[in-house]
Length: 136
Image 1 (cartoon, rainbow, N blue to C red):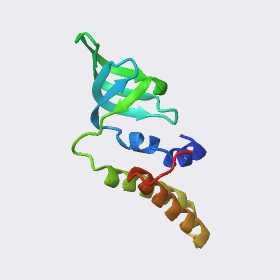
Image 2: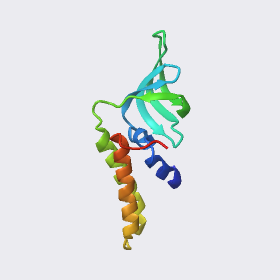
Image 3: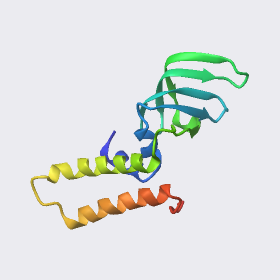
Image 4: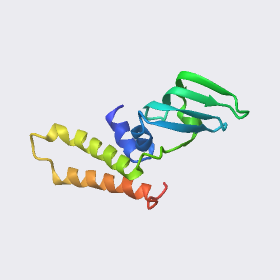
């Protein structure tokens, strides 16, 4: 994923979905079909690849797929697995991105301005998850 799109995903809950990679979960589509499986990949447009997918139609019919691609615009809900703590996951994602951003500067002093901006981004993500965020 390009750096600019990664930074943009940190400002949305897309980073949360990307953090669920390798987790078994349920995805509900806009047409009310449910898919259970392991999230393999999520791109910057929320297109999602799921392995070991169980595709359940409205009439109860189930189809199993080894790999399934879901267009991001068709996703209605993604269930958060019970064993995932949302705040811990978001903190991990933001911290990993911060480390990636600072790494090129590790041999030189990182400016206070850059560190302040990173801390502001962390706070913005935490506030959004806690319901304090504003919609644009």
